[in-house]
Image 1 (cartoon, rainbow, N blue to C red):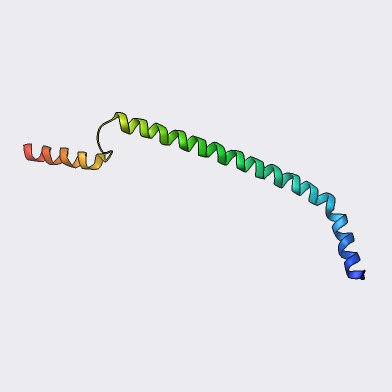
Image 2: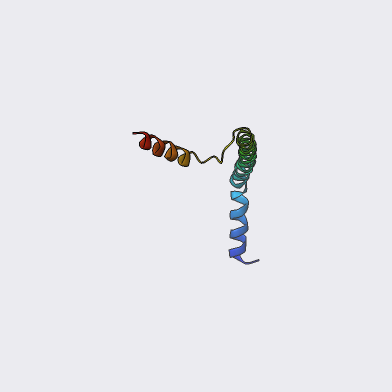
Length: 79
């Protein structure tokens, strides 16, 4: 083994305790990120289901701008 490889291996062995802490923190961050992502997806799905229920219960196409314009035009004709 060359001196360069011996220095590299000894440096890795010296850094191993510090890296293990990084691995634990990185693993915890990964698990937390996954849990938050799953919770967000679940809430989004629940919101989409709720929106579908509301749209099914309330008649119309959901575009209120056209309805407002029609009411404004109707009010102008009356004046």
